[in-house]
Length: 66
Image (cartoon, rainbow, N blue to C red):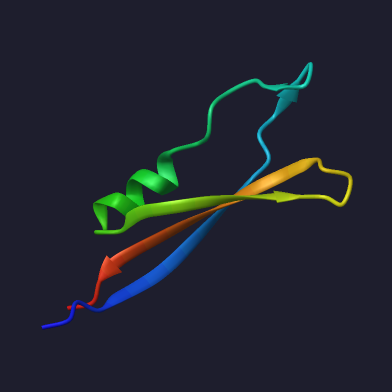
């Protein structure tokens, strides 16, 4: 039997920056909630402006379809 998957994504906007570095880590509340719902994090992709400024990131998830 072939396993079927469904996919989802979360977007987290850019972190609060101080002196070119993030002041805090990524907010994991949404990511942990997705894990509790059976989602597995499979990748992330930065979202940048045309000047290369990181504006945020997309987190990609999958879970088996029942």
